Image (tube, rainbow, N blue to C red; front, top):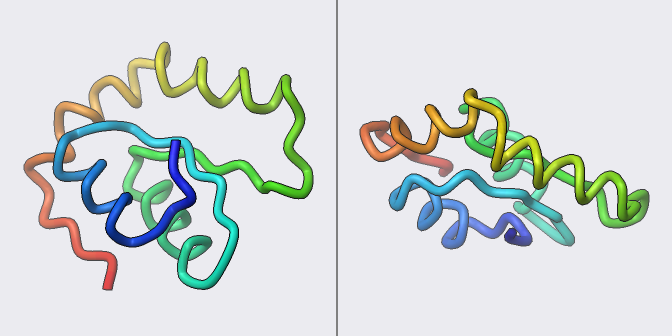
Length: 82
């Protein structure tokens, strides 16, 4: 889980870790949108987040083959959020 800042997002991509982002400020929304479009992240909005939403997103990241495969592939991507 991350707030979606540039460095934490790049670090997760480098290490091949799917992420759940909860953006708060500035570039974090954009970073999370780009991470989602590349297939290795999901986002929760802090103002509408519920416990079931959090649990569902975490289960998706841990259980769905799409994210398991993305985890293996991200390290080969040329990941540039800037």
